[in-house]
Amino acid sequence: MFPTLLEIMADLLGSILGSMEKPPSVGTDERKKAKLQKALVEKQQEAEKKKLDTFREKIQKQIHEFIKDGAQQKLQLQPMEKVLRTIVHDVAEVAGLTSFSFGQEEEDRYVMLWKKEFAPSDEEVLAYRKGEKWDPEKAKEISKQKEIDERDEKLRLQNPSQQIPASNYRDKYKHLIGDEAAKDAAREMVSNTSYGIVPSTNKRDQRTIEQVLADTRAKKRQKLDDVVVAANNSSSTFEPEPENSSEDASS
Image (tube, rainbow, N blue to C red; front, side, top):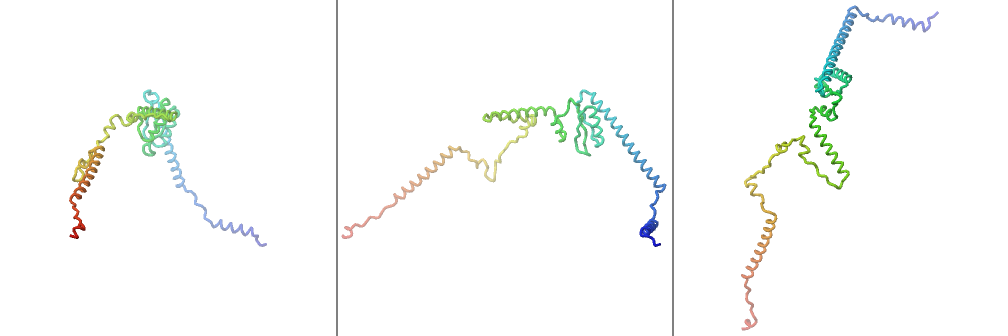
């Protein structure tokens, strides 16, 4: 009997598989190398975990001392990497503290802690985010001035016809520029006394408006007088020639 098509395909597949090379088996050296590498990774992970646990204990102790100190309202920690800041935030939350991170990532980013009763305002948080120092006394003055401005604006809206005088500039910004800042910053403006060859003081007209008008009228009168005098002089010097009468002609 002739082989069927299925048998032919099975023989062909068997011959192909038989001719293929078997995959290389993992030798003893490779297994040892993989085992050592795995052990090294586990050791590094264990060391990292121990490091984080030690840091957590240190932060817990530091925060505990901060809470016990009644004179401290906030605590600024040293810059640290992100994973350590995460631990600080976790410990602070458990301890009932308020915490924020400020600064540039991977440069000087740090964690600031506040006790709940001294939680920061939005203005204080914004100042730290801008990298500025927070001055509570200046903040009180700014807040007070803000209340005054809001009150004045409310009065203007209620009485649009009534003009409410603006507050004094120096008093308004005294907390920012100080009492003597404006005087120290001001400069006396001195004009240039000489410009070119003729001094500028000689070029400036020192007369008043009344004097200028009087001088103008005097010049106009003088000009008119000059015209009249010239006309009279010209008429007096002119002598008409005598006319020849008919009688003279006949004689």
